[in-house]
Image (cartoon, rainbow, N blue to C red; front, side, top):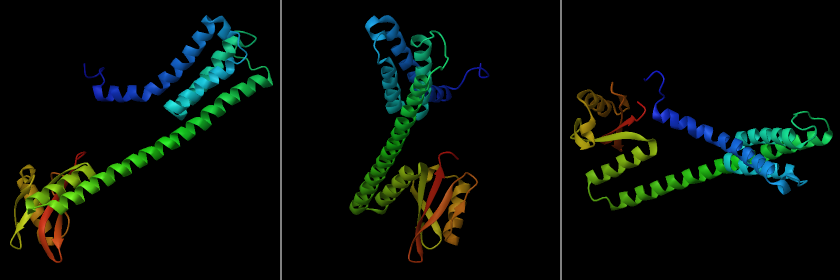
Length: 232
């Protein structure tokens, strides 16, 4: 039933967003289970540090908000199961407040730094990808042996850069167009918009969401480039 069944893509996106928080809960559960089952582990005086290590691991691997959840759950599990009075969330001493503050501070600092590093790495990867595309594009232009080959390179580069569909039409004479690269995807309405673009030497839009720009050298246009965003 479409009314109660989520589309697979939307469900996958939801699970992807939920996964870091599940990792945070599982981390706290694993440490608590281990502490309750292994006597020597439970009796150690550094159990709070072991919970803190779990918070740091979640912060480094999953980011800020999952680590904040992990820090709250870690202190709750530590306080409920191992601090006197047992089975209580009561914060009765300055040491309890210090433990809670330490968990939150560790999650906040490590999670924020991790998020910043991830953002910087994403920028570096995107810059490297664009530079690689530009290098391939310029190398292809240098080796182009025909107008059709050059047009194919241009449309491929624009499509990859803008994440869109592209088509190119060539001029015949001063005001006529002929089929070029991927021009079979254009309708009669699109062709009319391309002709208007050529005549006006300015951008024109068709009813089918195509945008056309003239390709000119000096004052003479030698073609028209069509672009249609994939979201359109």
